[in-house]
Image (cartoon, rainbow, N blue to C red; front, side, top):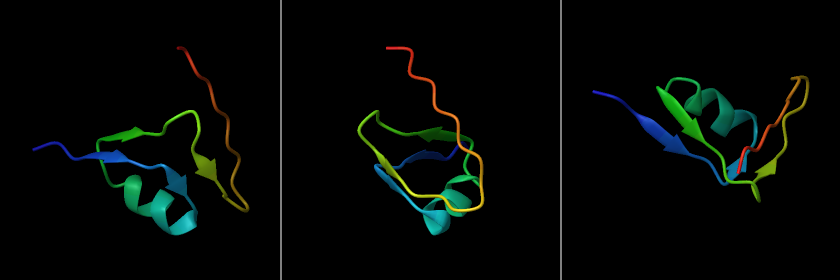
Length: 45
């Protein structure tokens, strides 16, 4: 079975939990607050 996560607010806790899922969906309006990690976003919409 596949696990899909939808993350409108992403901090360290939510990011680590979502990494265990097969797919991660983040809307363009999401609030992302990750310290100590490099984040690159690409929106192809």
